[in-house]
Image (cartoon, rainbow, N blue to C red; front, side, top):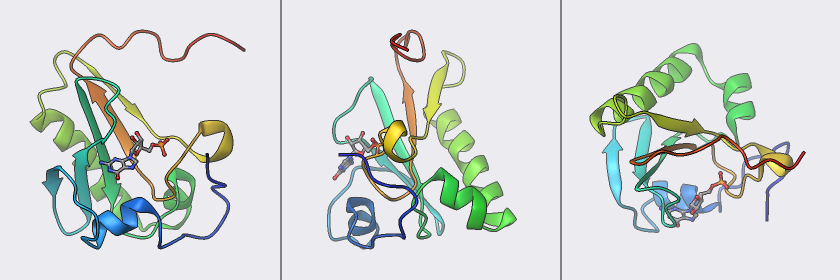
Length: 127
Ligand code: 5GP
């Protein structure tokens, strides 16, 4: 069930619980501001979720409220994780779902990194 990305941050969301250590995760990378872990239901051979540790509902919330340094660090770290995973030369996909039409299911900003095989066209047709 997609979330409403205009609603305030819900500290009971599953990624908040992962950040608090209440739910385990398969960590790929961690620093003081960012956590990256394997998706529990991978859609590609590599499917990593990258999240900021701050309480941001979505990309919309993050881009509106985060500081320039938080945004710069997050963007640089997503790129560094993709390089560390060897995704750049074969290519990969970066995706952030926002709100209802974006089918965002978890109300804590996360970027999906997909790779490890040819990923095909961006979206299934069906306008
Ligand atoms: P969204 O649709 O919000 O962009 O993506 C949410 C993603 O979180 C999905 O790909 C889903 O498989 C993943 N996910 C949901 N719950 C968990 C969990 O407890 N652990 C991990 N590692 N991934 C999760």
